[in-house]
Image 1 (tube, rainbow, N blue to C red):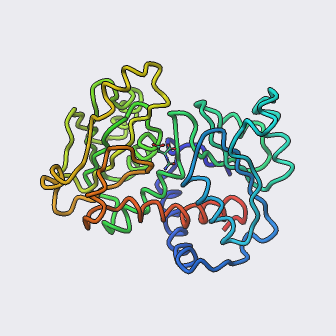
Image 2: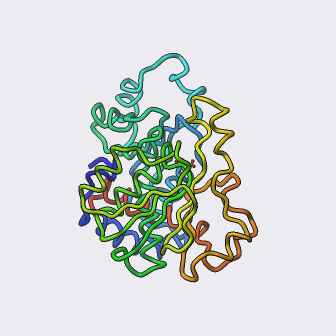
Length: 300
Ligand code: NCD
């Protein structure tokens, strides 16, 4: 089983992951190793920078008793010598029971899955998808709100290049939600994603200001590294900022989420507000990835 995209993920599968994540949360909180994946090896191939995704996969694998090999700087691997992704995958599958890959090219994880005999987990492919982030986001919402159906969710910031919001929008669309997409006009959600979502019957409102009264306000970083034109980045770089001032307008029960890293979207003065959930959200990366690793390698 590969985890490449949330686009075709079923509601049943998502609910199954969330249930298994709940069981893993106890182990993650206790930080006590179990032997569910003893003797198994995970390879992490990071062709792009990462803190949370890489470290939480490593921590998850370690807690389940397995081992991790990998690289996080392709300049120190044979990629530097011109090795193709297909060859790298064919080699690494011989060393590991599953592979997590993060790559700047859209479609890289799907391509890797074509060449790999072992499960491939997409840790982010360009501005396309980041499915494991979406699942931990779903878990965070479920924990905080007690449900996924009946929620109004605002996704704000860089909806064009942000892969986390692409994956999250598809995952949430399997539930009964309504969306507000808040972004500068040049960073709107890609049209084909909007049309996919609408065809599953979801209501979507697109605005170019920030909407602060939803059940969930999910902010994102403007993805500087994806802009072909740096001046265009500079024009939109301070588009949506949540600070102590805007916080006054926030709904009483609006939870604030962010996949992190943040740049200037949320000022540190917001961190101690009871509605700020982005650090607990990043913690849930560990149990969610434990559940996924166990599902792909131990068939739980
Ligand atoms: C995100 C990513 O890599 O897409 N980071 C993460 O995995 N939490 C978000 C981002 O880089 O803005």
